[in-house]
Image (cartoon, rainbow, N blue to C red):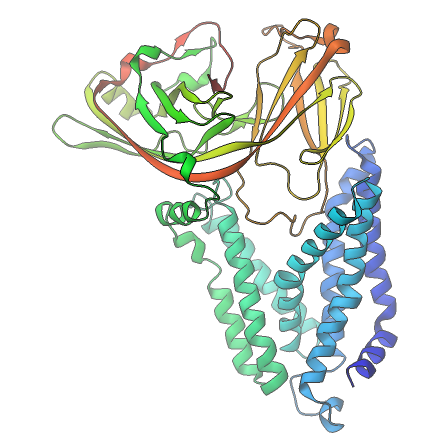
Length: 530
C-alpha cells in the first residue's frame, strides 16, 4: 500500500518536485559561478532570494504532499478505503526523503564534486546536511501540515511561528547573554532546532495515529511559547554547559592569568578612540601548550572601593571585543587572543572601559579589581603555505585556497573553500621567502562553537575570504613585506580548533586605574604573542 500511495503522490506532484529540484541546482550553479573571489558580482544579489525560494519550495512541496491525504476531519478518502494509518505516515515520510531530500543531497554532492573534493567527503557532508534539514526543517513542516486542512492554514501557522521567532530575535534576545554577539550564540539555535524536532515527534504520531488535531495544535502552541526561553538563560550556566562539552579539558588545567605590572603601559596610536575612559591592565597568561591560542569569550569586572563598596560591576568592554582588523577584514580581539608557538607564558593587556562619570570618579582612587574570565583554549589543527600571488593549493584540513592581489594593490586576497564549516580560529602571516621578513600575524577568530560541521540552512560550501595588507593607502603603516616583494612571498596559514573551555578568576587587591592608561607611541602587532 505504501508504494501505491507513493505513486499516486508522484503522479500529482512531480512538476513541483522538478521545480524545487531545479531551484536547488540553480543555487549550486550560482555558487560555482562565483568561484573563490565572487567574480560574477551580478550574481551576488540573487543569493539571498535564491535561498528563500529553495526553502519556500521545499516547504510548499511537503505541505502539498501531506494535503493529498488530509488528516483533520472525517470525510477523507483514505479513511473510507480504509488505508492503514502507519502505511500513510510511512509513505509521507518516504516521499519527503526521496522526492524532497533526494534532489537536495544530489545537488550538494554535485557541488562538492564540481569543486574538486573527493566523493567520500562530498557524500558525507551532503548526507549530514540533508539529515540536519530533515530533522529541524522538513519534519516540523510535515507536522504543521498534518494539523491543517488547506495550504493557507499551513502557511499561516508557519508565518505565525516565524513572526514570533523574528520578534524575539529583534526585541528580546538583543543584549541577552546568548545573543548573536556572544560566542555561545549556537545554543539558542540548537535549542530551537531540538524544540522543532520534539514538537514534530509529538504532533505527527498524534495526528496520524489518533487524529487528535486539537491536542496537536495545543502542543504546537506550547512549543511556540517556549521560543523566548533562551533569553532567560544567564551566562554562567550556559558557559558551564559549554565547558562540559570540551573535547580535551586537561591542557587548560595549568593555564593561569596573573597581574604583571612589569609589562608596563599599553601603547596606542595617536587619536585612538580605545583610550577614552579606558585602562589597560598588564597581564601574563602562563601554562600554555605549544601552538595554542587562548581567547576571552567574556570578561566580567568588579571594581571595589577600600570601604568594600562596589563601584562598578559588568562586562569589561562589552565583550566580545571584536572589531575590524587593521584593514584585513578579519576579526581580532585587542587583549585576547594570546598566541604561542612554543608554549609557556604570554604577556598582554586587558582593556577595561567604564562609563565616563564613573571613570572620572575611580581613576585616581585606590581600588580592588576582580576579573572573572570565561576562556577557550585552541590547539593547532593544520598548517600550510601558499604563494602570495596567484596561488592555488588544496589541503585536506584547510580546503581549496587561492590568492590574488586586489585591484588597488592594498591587499593580498586569500580565499578558501572547505567541506563543512571553516576553522573557528585561523592565523595568517605574509612572508618573504628570500629574506625571511614577515608581516604581523593576522587573526580570524570567530569563536563559533557549533558542535556539528554541516552548514545547516546555508550552502555546504562557500568561500571564506582573508585579506593580508601590504600597503596602507594613508601611508601611516609600513609593512616589512610590501607589494614589490610579492613575487617572492608566501602566506603561512594555520587553523585551530577549540579543545577546552574554562574559567579563571583574577584579583588585584590594590591598584590605581589611572596609572594604567594607555600612552601614545608606535603600535606593535595587535595580538599578544610570545
